[in-house]
View (cartoon, helix red, strand yellow):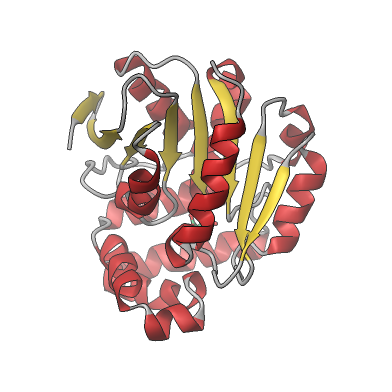
Length: 268
Ligand code: MLT
């Protein structure tokens, strides 16, 4: 896995597929890592270059202290793209990955060719949501990442996935438990203070695909519907038999729609 040094931390990232093809930058959710995009990378790398970083504090990247604001995480991505000498990218994120995509688009819209917003929402946290983040940060600090995995898993994956898809359950568990405590706490506090992005949506002027698992209880289809109404020309797709991690729970359908969207984009 290549590594890129950004000030006080090392960012590890995947960079696969044809260097000639249009570049796609995929941003993982919380608290996962670039490996969550493996089903998409396998499906796309014949034609697209896919860049997928481990965000600061996640996966193999190091975990500097501090609050990981969405703007800071977006700035890390901007530095990575500079390092790779990549100009405009198709930007995709799942959940927290899309919170970061909103921050990136707000500052660097000219670098974005298209957007893919999966299992996410534009609203900021409510006070109750912020409190739940802080409770989870305390749980991480006092009891470790395993306790965090136990708390999160039932809300991330549907019951059929948890009962019958041992590979995905183990994979998600592994990613969560592999996240450092500083990474968990830094991202939780960053998400808790993130700005509301609803006002940004009508200003989005690039082709946008919105995907959501039909049984996503963390960022439900109603949120996706609302985003689709606010982003001019956005396409909304509901992924059957999937919860919050729709790209892992139903990769066939997710990839089919993603591929169709990517192939429909105007050539650079
Ligand atoms: C994620 O998957 O990134 C998280 O569920 C986002 C969140 O907790 O708001």
